[in-house]
Image (tube, rainbow, N blue to C red; front, side, top):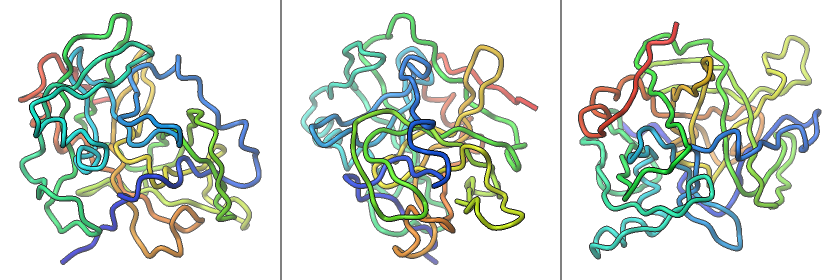
Length: 265
């Protein structure tokens, strides 16, 4: 039975935040997250996100390969240009998760996995890759989301674009086949909203759910979709879905040389 509504309409929202704090507090410095990079840059903003997980490997949502032109480049036996921490690089190979159905569609059936590994032509000097989480203790953790493009608030449908990287945080409410996050309204008494409450939106597919650990960033999830109907997209009450990286750590390590893992407690 189909159960997951994917975020595959790319040109719209990016990080959506709580309404009572102001947009400025959610702006992130790209220099603090050099391993995070967009897959498509245009005059309208950036679309889809990938995370460097080894010197020559990155991880993203599989449907981003189809939505950014990367698929066409691979089909034509051409490389695909990207920039990591301001340094030019190229994607030369894509490995889809074996349970990816091969097409992007509005719903995802149980058992499908929306992940793809991206092989780069060379390492990016001075950029430390993210560490892959391979434990099973995600529930309740407060993780950080990142994305470029339009911004907005959970109380309104209004959106704007300024091309700046933004972050938000949210707590894992369920960890089963995927990681689940709820966008809580901070206004009601007893609200579970965290200080930097927010969610990714349309266009932020492939983005990371991170947790810092000493001097490294640990990757827990990859943004793939949202449960519920269009009336809740980017609004309070939305439930956001991330691929649960820990369940696929063995596949990642098997195919990507040099990946580091952590069972952070």
